Image 1: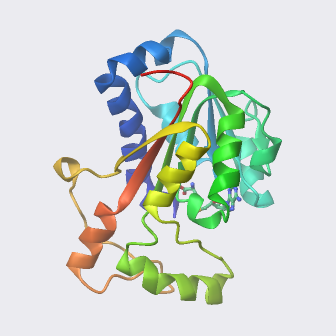
Image 2 (image 1 turned 120 degrees about the horizontal axis):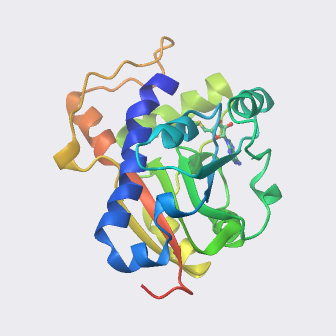
Length: 229
Ligand SMILES: C[S@@+](CC[C@H](N)C(=O)[O-])C[C@H]1O[C@@H](n2cnc3c(N)ncnc32)[C@H](O)[C@@H]1O
């Protein structure tokens, strides 16, 4: 999983850089990365791969990395990598208004309630913070429609097919401006042959399906409405 996700993690970090570069009002609102410590939280951090990529990113200095991970073994590995970070079993344990930047990659589809998730984001973000939540479109993606049942049968993972429009609507109801963009915009797309895991789960039936799967990976930006842009 870690190797396959490197490219997605880099693309997610690039999204943050793009938003800061293109949105002057937002940039003015969010302190520029090197100038003060940023408290970054990865929801569903597993062993901390995305957090490592964040720490290694050129220009992203003065960052304190933290994570939420319910799996004890994975969380312990993340703690070993980042002994100064705070790692939580549940999102509810993160202190209020403690995070400048929240990221999450392929975790929201494992979370049932979009309302609870959005309300928790609002609770933990500093008022001038923002969140970048990335996931494949599990409701609009033919590959995911096929993979969901075996994922449950083989691994017991229950996935939730959140509609992208619901993620936006419910985020707005919780008090955010929610924008959406592709994780892999076509201009940056260099698809390679996909190597499915050895057990065969996650295979594509065609190149078309593989390319569509990539196109359907979305990043939702959550910005507290209280801060006019
Ligand atoms: C598909 S993995 C993605 C891991 C990592 N974000 C990455 O990009 O490789 C989903 C992760 O979310 C975690 N997870 C599941 N339910 C969660 C929840 N309610 N809150 C936070 N993390 C959760 C899982 O334990 C797992 O580590």
